[in-house]
Amino acid sequence: MTPVAPEFTTWTEVPADDELRLIPIGGLGEFGMNALVVHSARSLFLVDCGQLFPSDDQPGIDSIVPDFAYLEPFADRLQAVLLTHGHEDHIGALPYFLRRWPVPVYGTAFTLGLVEGKLREHGIDTDLLHPVPDFGRVKVGCDEDGGEIEAEWIPVTHSIPDACALALHTPQGVLVHSGDFKIDPDPPDGRHTGMDRLKALGDAGVRLLMADSTNVGRPGRSPSESACREGLEAAFEQTKGRLFVTTFSSNIHRLQTLIDLAYEFRRRVVLLGRSLDRNLALARSLKRLSLPDDLLTDPKDAHLFDPDELLVLCTGSQGEPMSGLARLLRREVKGLPIQPGDRLVVSARAIPGNEVAISRMLDEAERLGAETSLEGPGPVHASGHGSRDELADLIRAVRPAQMVPVHGTYRNLRAHGKLAASLGWAPERISLLDGGLCLRLFGEDRMDMPGAVPVGKCFVSEGVDHMVDARVVKDRLILQEDGVVFATLLVDPQTRDLVADPTILSRGFVMLSDDEAYTELLAGVARKTYEEAPPEIRKDGEALRDTLRLALRRVIRKTTQTRPLVIPVVLEAPGI
Image (cartoon, rainbow, N blue to C red; front, side):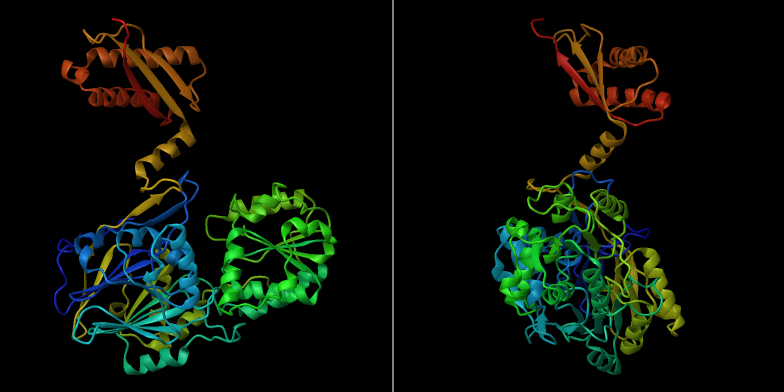
């Protein structure tokens, strides 16, 4: 999405010596595809490099990544990628980015463990990955000390291990990027958000805070992850048959709670889903999760146990069609039929846009006899994002000179700005950015927003080694909604005259009540358009097809109010 803002006309020029540019090329005005360019005369790097999952109006697309057009004029200057945590909307675009710019990638151990698996799948050098401990620091950029900007990783609680905020120590002052965070008073792993360090930075002076806006519309505080144990325990107590639980495979804390409960209730654990296997193996290797070896059971051996002896952990909490849960619902997993007495628990929040798919999934489980409701004393899910009181706590702790809401739709960003205003921040101290809109910081507390740089979305389809053109996605959507109309014209190769009436063929297109008469109408339009075309148009195949396409589209739209894909085909008659 290109923001409604004037163009930053000199964006291809290297920043001035005292200039620092902050440019969100994804993640603002939307949920997902988080990527922030940090650019000065001597430094150029990204904070996060995430993907966006496609919606229903993007058929055949597997993922969407940022357009990195801004970086092209400075391709030889790019120095690093700094990661806040390992969720796909923050790391998912890295394979596509690193194929073009193989630069060092810095992040915490669990984050880089997730990235390493992705890079191996894409055949990219994993030596690019450099782990950083909590409160660790890395210098980025060029100067006599080895780096103009020093990045500091500050631990935060979130729904994935090893999440961090970033403090960027720059010549223009300290910038704090919250990443995705909450302030959990009782995290299962004992790793708390580093509020003391954030307050110390605030005491020393912070120039700018970029803070997560995801849950700004939720009052109060997000429940602690530990609060989920009570609700999940109720699910174990109330389930007489198999207990199926689906959650995000990266939520290691939730999975640890479920594994602990399975041990207490004497249920064996079955894992269904490739990402679950991979992420649990990584968490165990990094000692982020404890799992007795004799607790796991292979899916093919599940039939050896009574229903009340099994906990099935599966992917698919968002209704994904190729997930472990989807396979269960299609009865594709032998020995694990969902049946009366079983229960399905969705221990995850619906990502906006997935509500219909999740509803269908729950309905199918009920159709097979499983219970999907739960009467219990506590929640089975806790958000990994802080609610309004936690966002206010962060603003008060950091006390930035400038507040910049990030991560979310424009409505979220604006609500976050209003929250800062209610805490005493004047309007001129609150900057609302949008995708591609550049914020420049200079010395002596001077700043401006010179305009927008080119940004956009690149479409990825698995098995295709290049980005999918947006026009292809548009054509697929047209085919899905209004179908396709083919108009075939047979011409004399010498005279270029028609040798037969044009033929009309359609698929997925609803014609008028008299299909034969309507076909004749379209054939007549094609004939008339061809015969009235100037000789130079007839000789130019592309121009001729465009002329025919426009004429047919015009009459179809006028008579049916639809916009099918129109494909003219011009063939030379054989043997003439």
